[in-house]
Length: 83
Image (cartoon, rainbow, N blue to C red; front, side, top):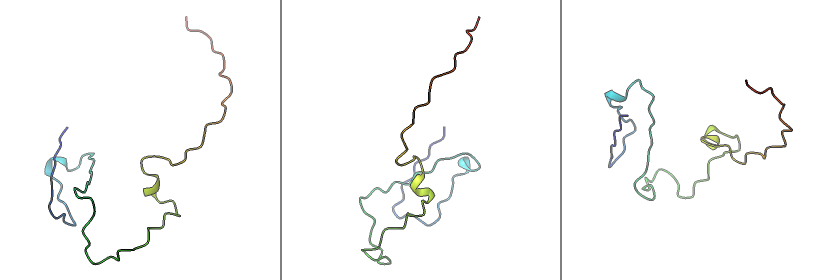
């Protein structure tokens, strides 16, 4: 497994992929190292939350919220024993 950790003081809009990771199945994780993003002045402080009523992929990524309880499945069929 190849792991490359890069810390950027000011993250660019485009990040170059190292040659050894190109054309491979790769996981990319972005973690902010500060508690709150700096106020860039382009967005209002009290901006409304994004509309998730259309059930976007972001809402369902990784798990299914409120997965329904499984109902009774009945009895298993009897099978012949292996000899």
